[in-house]
Structures are given as C-alpha cells and as structure tokens.
Amino acid sequence: MSDIDLRHLRSFLAVARERSITGAGAVLHLTQQAVSTHVRHLERSLGVALLVRTSRGVLLTPAGEELAAGGATVVDDVARLAERVRAVADAQAGTLRLACCPAATSLFAVDVADVLEQAVPGLRVVLSGARDPRDELRLLGDGHADASFMWLPIGDVGLHHAVVRSDPRAVVLSARHPLADRPTVTLADLADDPVVRPDVLTSPEAERFWLADPRPDGSAAPRGPLVPLVEDCLLEVGRGRGVWLAPQPLETVMPPGNLRWIPVTDAERFDLAVVWSDRAPQPLITRLVAEVRALTGHDQRLHAA
Image (cartoon, rainbow, N blue to C red; front, side):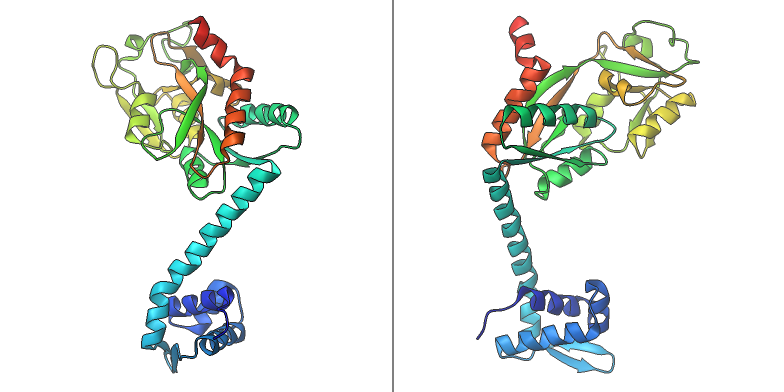
C-alpha cells in the first residue's frame, strides 16, 4: 500500500460530511472531477472501496465510515504538528509574533517591536492585529501568535503572564455630566452612574475588575448597557447612557471629542502584561519582558515602592 496523500484524505472527509461529491467540491473550491479523482486515488492506496455512489449522492461503506471517524483526527494532528514545527523554526530564526488590539495596545506594541529589534540583532518582530481581548486569546490558543499585550485579569485560561506596566484608571464622562469639570473623582462620586460594558472581556473576573465591582463600601457596581465593541462605549457615554471605566492610556488612541477622561483616585490600577502560551519561544519571551520593563521603567518603580 502506498502512502496516503493528505489532499486525498481531506477530499474524502469533505465528501463524507457533505454526502455529496459536488457539495465537497464547493466546500473545498475544487471541481467535481478533482474530488472524484482524489477519492479514487485514496481507495487505490488503501485497497478498499470507501463510497457507494447513488442517484441521491453517496453512501459510505463500512470501511469508509471507519476512515471518516478517524481521518479528521489525523488531519487535525498533522495541522497542529505543522504549526509546532513552524513555531520552532521561527524561534530558531529569531521571529516573534505579537498580537495586539488596534484600539488598545497597538501604538505601544509598535514602540516595543522597534526597541526589541534594535536590542536583539537579527530578530524580526511580527505584529498581528486582534479585534478584541477574546480574539487575542484565540490567536494565542491557535498558535498564530507567540505573545500578546493584555490588561489583567484575563481569567483562568491556561496562559502565562508577566506584568510590564501599571496604568491608572480613568472614568469617561459625557461633557454634560455633573462631574465633567472635576480634575479627579472617586468611586463614591460615581456610585449612581451605570457603567457601560463592552462585550469583549475574557472572563467574569475581568468584567468585575473593569466595573470596579464591588465598590470600596461593598456595594455592587451599577451595570449599564452591554455593547459589542470598545468604541461603542464612547458612543453610549456621549449619549449620557452611562460612564466607562478604562485604562488612562486609551485616551491617546480614543480622542475625547465631547467626552471627558478624568482620573479615579481610589480605583485599582490596570496591570498591562505580556501573555503567552507554553508553545511560545521562551528565550525570546524572556527577552521581550525584560526589554519592555526597561522601556516602561516597571522594575524601577517596584523597587522605589
């Protein structure tokens, strides 16, 4: 028996799912003839019949059912192995892939990438945009990114992290809000203001932290509208439907317009961290953390404290 060609196996699995050679071709963007040829080659390689063609499509033989049951696992295993091989090659070649949210840490990530490439001769830092924190976790989990910059907490998601910067918390208010002209506010000042919530956070723990829930007196934070995107928070605040608690640095990438960004003096700061998985090239991650901490002065502030 000759070796099984993965292209032929993928075509057969598509036929098994669609119960149609024509349908499999549409899914795979192949012609019906190409799919049929792949299946015939696979049958010859295995020495068995896999399909029975009927006027209403195809049926799987018992051998075909067995191959369909185990074939998907084989294809997935090969794909994951290929991803691991590429990750090892990237690490040896000096490539580090960072995921970042355009609305949050992208400007910071650009500075970090430039500094890191200057500090490590031959290193290439690749930045990949992510829509939101959940998308960052997906890129890390799929192996399409080695590390990401994320504000903690992110929940128990099986990843490692190292804090590299601490950011003050601000409240975003409408310019018509009674507190809009204050230089600073406290959480007690905001006790009756519903907090707008972007539906992008990675865990209930993260949502509670962004809401500052519970408040210092033990009361629950009033929950405002749930919106799809971070940018939508500004729209809701501008319309007077609540306030938003966010890291102060976001003000530089989200122009205030008719809004006010005001420091909250008694709210916990946001810790920005490098987050990575077990598959990431550890020597490059270690260097990344060290260089970012040097850039932000994080270690010096810890010692001073």
